[in-house]
Length: 319
Image 1 (spheres, rainbow, N blue to C red):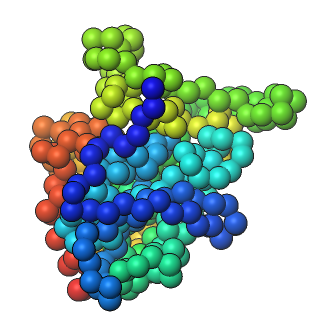
Image 2 (cartoon, one colour; image 1 turned 90 degrees about the vertical axis):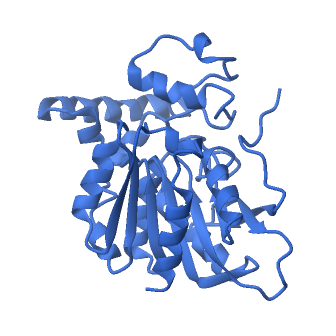
Image 3 (cartoon, rainbow, N blue to C red; image 1 turned 180 degrees about the vertical axis):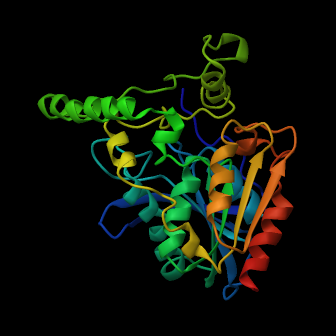
């Protein structure tokens, strides 16, 4: 059985698959969404949609791209390098530098090759793990006029994520460093998927795990959010790259361009948004969604504050 997009394309939106290279020459696979029946010379604002860590353009990113195209934006959802339909070998390798670069590569394409795009009005929405890399890209790429983070995760903050004591941190580094020898001898990196090859039929079929794991499974392991190209996480030694890079080091330099941090009041990840909000300079805003967990903002249209996001982005272009 094959699985495609987790949301139906609006009858008022066109979707086109494109490929382009990042500045390292690696091919990026992306989908561009545009409102139908545009006049030939019509220019619209654009939004780059960054998918969650380990996710693909057919999942939460497609929901955001499809939704905001209906509101008059050109939107672009992409697969990260080494993920999905993008190039890069071996598969599932994660690099924070390359992941941030993917946002700028999308801006490259939108500003030069895409039809109907006003290149001076490009914003970014980063979802979950994609949000940290979106902020990192915006800190140096001034063409990005505003950033919206959704249920943010900072994947480079492994120290806080795992709450590691100094001796535990050393043990982790030592384990990952020695794994490099095994990977080199094996000719391929160690990789352990988090999600099944086929989706479970219902919540009742999910294996019994801890609360956090069950939350991920409720999205990625059910037909609700499943895609065969998104098995979750990255190669084991990818965490070494995350340990030597900090996505938020230069978040203050995004100012005077605005940032909107959106997260649920019940999100297990809310501390990442709150820390990033604290570190960022003005102008910045927070929007806390009531009765909302982390994955609600992936696909629950009753929880995603679409109108507020659209207004924020449009206002950022007029600042």
